Length: 95
Length: 470
Image (cartoon, rainbow over all chains, first blue to last red; front, side, top):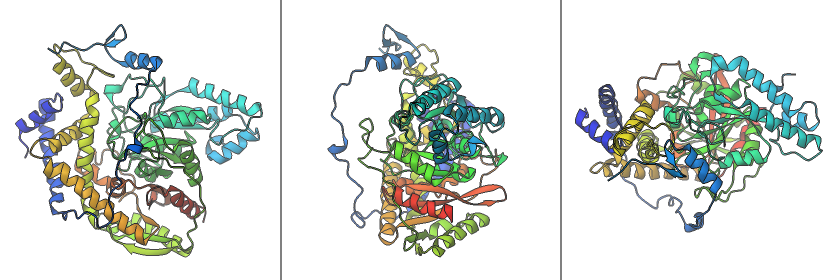
């Protein structure tokens, strides 16, 4: 069984606030799911090259990293943010 | 004549010959939605005004004598994880309850260029994570064939909308089976295209190495028409490939069909098995050669999928932080905003998968889980590559059972995950798959899954068409 502290540590890493009840349910679910994942230990080791390789990502798939300006869209995206001021998204003080 | 029973082609012919207008067609669908959707709950939102405006524009085009494309004036439904500019896009989550899409997804742009009529947005499990729509924050979509049962998921709303004639066709997305499984449960055609054949720009990301958009339709030909409209390279999605989808006329005659033995093992419902075996026998009768094949790594697929999927989810859902969009909970500091907004806005399933993903990616566990899963994914890919040296297509069930009862699996995530057992492997290999209705257990539809090699959608569709017609 995954401990309460372990779930709380993961929740903090994932930036999730969980209630006591949620932590308890998560302990139970996570334990069952991770047990199931142990099945992979039985999988044979990977021998590469036996049936060709997975397609490689080539730079041909990528577009040039250019600035595309679309003021209309920027405005709409900022409008969707919960807190904004003068065309900027407002964030709490970090430091 | 009930206009909502027409296929895309029939509706197109009717519009072209002015037997009826797009406005009449659209009104007929809106009336059906009003009549049926209180009970079924396929839609999360209806855009009546927008749909009628698009219909009127289509009618103007038709009346002016301009040649119209196949989808012009035809009403459709869009899964609520795909952005349609100006309409709410919730992804079935409270955290996006009031989020309005600032732009069109590429698939929507392509449909709009054809003159499509968008009726509304359909229900989905939260962030497309689920197999029944029971994980939607806005309630379950019921199966039109039996209202006590689920429509499947995550694109259950889109499947149910097409099955109940509340849309002529619909778009959904498939990460582990989210198009094929609800299509099977609702008795419609559902196509999950090859990874890379359809742009995902504007699809709210679930697991980016797996997500794919595809059509739901009443017939195979309709699915083909929609696939043709939405596929192809898009500079906004670097994973989309330069692929021109062509309709071909492959024949079952002489075709080598593989039947993977691992898909007929323990856990498969006897009635479902019989329907699938009968469909395979039918293909054989029409001249196909049936070949038994083995995909030995199938047993590991589900674990592999939930590790990779959850890991990608934990990264992808980091953007829902209470700052950029959606729900934001006030707090004294930034960390508090993150914790509270995500804690209150996200439902149980996304939380569970974020935690699993965070675990699998965290220091000390990464090699045992994430890295191992990536290796197993390659084994699965190799299994299929070997099989496709011997056969042209694979035939198997979509789901081990027909639509299950609402609530039956809702409390146990592991049982729910097992519902995806037959759709996940091909997805890990990036292969296209189609669900074709081939029979019923009582009143519950059962779909045959046809899997093809990469970019062989045309072959899948051509053979499915032949099976559908004979």
